[in-house]
Image 1 (cartoon, helix red, strand yellow):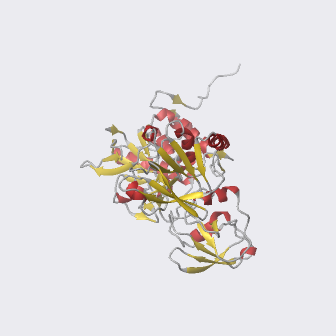
Image 2: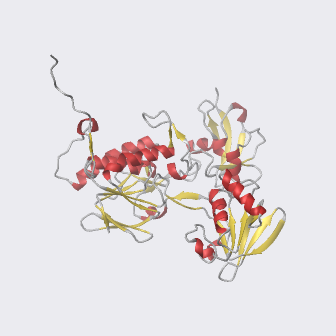
Image 3: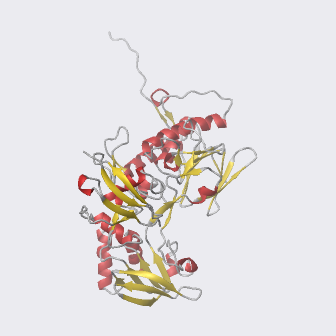
Length: 109
Length: 350
């Protein structure tokens, strides 16, 4: 299993290219937290259950992502600053096909 | 004034378990929580979700864990101030504290243990620029007294259970009820969704979907909301606008208590007893931070246990004590109950 590269634009607009492991069952929200790209307590508040939208991000690259679950879809229907390319980071699990993924963190609400 | 030995702020699993460990040391506890029920996130956010890393429980629903903890601490008769947020703290000359809630309830204790998790749950406010101008002048985020809406035109927005349930309830009270939601689908219990459908068919609820309230109009009180539905934008007269978008945790007033804050959490000086920079105030569970911190319920239990030992020493500096196993000492409740292991019987066999 190899690490993949992900480019994350933080809430201040700064781009970070990070290595994300594909063998630890991690999701994008956890990658952001592991690199401390958003302050603790402002991301992943519900722990990754698609129940708070604090990990909302905009997907900038055209990678094929897992289909949105019912829970994620409905959570985004109640979130703010939602765009066409909004996803919840906690629902995007890191695997090899996501190498080169580019995302931007949505503003903190 | 409510008096106790350890005043616990936050009635989540960590706060609840602290009652048990304090009880073994004959210390009484009182808990304050902004939510109307104990259990914290476990009850409020994910009561039906299984937890797999509670030692000894291969699987337990968060709601069941809370019920079990409530049963476990019952003999120690904890007091509860629920539905009130701890707002201010005052240190008295003798080193004890008075904590006052936003409703004015006062609590006095020599020890304060903050087990506040992610903070107190507060309503999420929609990003409408002038919304604060109309708060309590037509905009309410929480329904406290339904009678406020009698014979009024009410617009509710949101897609979850509270938006559905209040829409249903207010049809019998308000002059008109309009429910605005960004999707056609709702995230509530199936029977609530069906009930709203039925009331819509009867003309008792007007549904505007997929749509969103994007503006508020009024001189001093709210008079109209601006609704965006697809490309169309229109105004709708109303007396009240109630956005119900769930609750989000905020550290809140605790952040202003003079405690050291780091990473949106309360920094503790050490991991021996989880005391903060203010002697006598402890922080346990998800609310604290220290090198190596993990936000796990099981870590909260450990922190609560060590905190109680330290609190005991602080309250009784001259008393000697060693920790006793419950298997040996049993559990003596403040209610007179006593649980203990059956004693071995010595009897010869003929």
